[in-house]
Image (cartoon, rainbow over all chains, first blue to last red; front, side, top):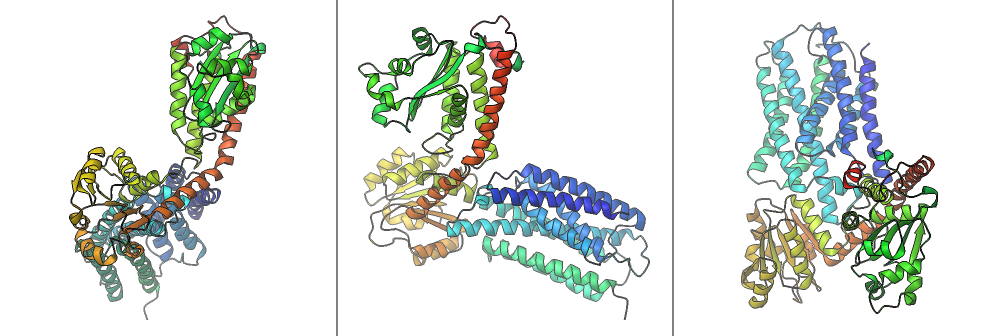
Length: 263
Length: 367
């Protein structure tokens, strides 16, 4: 019933991806505005999907891997819409749309929309814990996008091979400033998510806790390394990409483990 | 309001044309003979055109006019010639466009497609100033008004919808563009000029025009450093201290006549550690080079020598050339649209209007 909304949303992101590819291929001006509105439309459809699914479940729609991926994609789009214009990173849409499109396409195509084996009751703390953690993942995803943009630009500046996209990227120092702020925001949200996990009332799954603390420590180490000037900006950008890749893998593992029936 | 404007003269006999001389057809020695500051009013009186506008830049001198009767190219050339110049000598250097071709030519000029450096944007300002001047002298009527307003719109669309203006095409402007891409706002940036050559001075001036206020100049001859510092509103620094400056500065422009590299990774490494991750942009325009190429391998250091700057300028120019087709498409659409408007204006009955529109009517009809 609710899947058409998600398909509509995915098509909006696909439009942004196609528009970017065509502009890059034709070497014509890339306009952030189209991507911004395409992502905005995709976000509205995503929100409608999550709302319909949430009403059907009677709780926050984070009960299986499918919903986790959609919620993560929604968080990425939300943070982009909030952060992109603020930091004048309109081109971020060109990088964000493919990420969100990939997440949702995977969610739609993979056989992961399986109802949770046990009936889940509404638990405000659990829902807060899950949703705030997902939004933190969304922020980390955007820090990963900013990291990719930084590395692309740094590489072009080092090799003196300035491609068309170079002229649309924000200045290197501004990009790194935005990346650092995204890291701090994501880390703060993730910390809040971790702390709220202790108030959910149920027994805390050991594997989940270890994985979650592993991600928290990874991002904490990046921030500490940055604060103490151990890592050069290029290394921080590369670590952001690596950390997000690791975090998504962990997220997958956590949900995979939690959906398996108890042995 | 715009479409209510009507051509002042009988439209079926109104002749829109452009006569000019440019860098495409004549060298500067020839062009300068026709770059006299004469008024459009005088042109109208002498040739009998209904409307006239003169565009005079360093690369072109052109007259755009509308007239009921045909006016010979030689007559315009004679009027443009400075005293003592025999216009007939250079008759072949003059070109003439009429009707639709005139419209297309103006749109190409305003969009920078006809410029020596394709896509340069100064020309639009020059066209606007020429239009304003002709309008002040009440030599612009409804036809030239609509034509030039449309030309400004075309230029804006070409600039925003294509990459024709992207990338710098001279060594100095490439350096400034790269500095902006690395640092963003340049106002708080510190620049050191090492070796006070002419190109470094020009680059420093270009950076200064983008807001840089802290410019230091170091040269083997302190007097020369003082002299250049005075020119770029900077301060001289002893040549013995220049390496220490690398702790503080953000941009180094080097152009000494040293035979061996002055800056190597060994020299720079201890200084970089004290820079708190701030990038260092080095522009080495010396030949032989002042900075060892290995410096570019260091984290946070971006080294550009004269070849790489020239190569980027060439890349930008190539990129601009690739955009010409897209720009021509935009122009073609506007030419067609303008011709449609012109045809409609000719077909409809004309109200009784003054030959030259008043200020309020012109403002109201601006596109």
